[in-house]
Amino acid sequence: MSERKVLNKYYPPDFDPLKIPRLRLPKDRQYTVRLMAPCNMRCVTCGEYIYKGKKFNARKETVQNEDYLGIKVFRFYIKCPRCLAEVTFKTDPANSDYIVEHGATRNFQALKLAEEAAEREAKEEEEEEKNNPMKLLEKRTKASKQEMDLIEALEDLKDLNKRQANVNFDDMLGRYAAEREAMLQKQEEEDEKFIASVFGKNEGATVKRIVEDSDEDSGEEVPKKPRTTYEKPTDILAEDYSMQSTKTTSQLTASGSSVKSSSSKTALAGLVRPKGSGASGVSGTAPQAPSSSNVAQSAPPSSTGLSLLGMYSASDESSSD
Image (cartoon, rainbow, N blue to C red; front, side):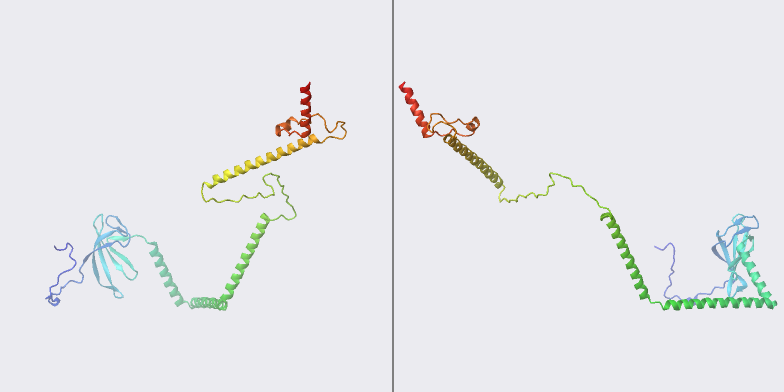
């Protein structure tokens, strides 16, 4: 299948370009090209404005017997989009511009007019200098003065460069580092002063704090119980049972000792008598009965030998009667 747009052509092996006849084309032949309007124009026939950048299918030809420094000049033919009148313009290599020749007029251009006026003034000054020697002398004096000013400015720049060339950059860096270190140290001192003023002691004033009395905050240290470790989880139950048994044993021991002390005191109370009493040592009276509190707390006192003898004699007399 052949290509739709053929870009390459086939040349057979036996192709000889010398056999192709040379075409004899006229020098003023025209080519169809696509271009844009180079400037703003107005059609002379219908007055339609053709703006710069509008695209046209134009015919191009080379202008005969006209060039600029070996550069060819080309002419273009376009048609007005409204009335189809023919408009022609050609290139202007001398001014890098275009010249409208026929069928339209170019719109007003202020920049082009200003450039033309400047060129005319420059030409007039040149002519005046050639004809007036005093004007030429003034211009030369002004130019020499300007040159002297430029030389002085250049010398000043050279002196400045020499001064900068003698500068030791290591010393400059050392000074900069020292100044930076001093600045950092000063900042640290200011920070320390601020901290001392906020958290430290106030100068010339004493601050007293009221100590609150509390039972919880006592100075005595509470002894800490040693932490015991258990091999088995059930050891804690055995420990509680042993602690309870020791508590009951200590309570029974304390009660037994109190009973013995009270019984001994009551026995001695029956034997000891005060001196003032007239009764004999052997009497039939019974010892003073203990108080109800003592009876309740302690066991009844044991009977002595004298009391038993008195009780025996009293029983014999009652039986004889």
